[in-house]
Image (tube, rainbow, N blue to C red; front, top):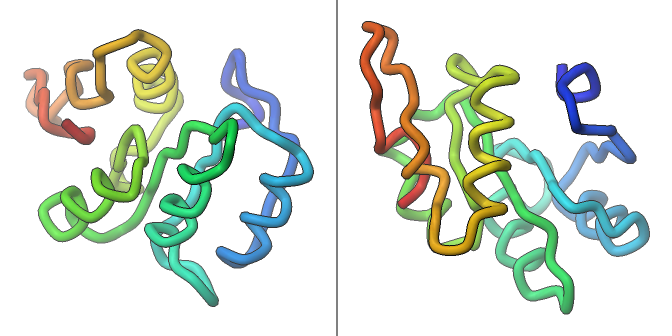
Length: 126
């Protein structure tokens, strides 16, 4: 789905947190989309380590776990957004990326549809 969403181009994929770190170092992507539950180090720890790079990529964490369970940990990891996999789609990806590109704007500032046709401004990370 990511590769079919403008303007994204997939440059690599990884099966573990360690592999993600190695590939991110070699490929220097602008964005890393990563599951929280990974073999080896989890996505939150991998996001922390990516944030420490000299030119860190933006990181979006996804998971089947609820926003309430992981939002604080995701925020502290340096991720620009946390998106529940059931809500993940092209619009959410583009909105999180756009919010990250604007100084002072975080993904949670981009209104998200709460499933009732209303905006939920806390769907990302504040």
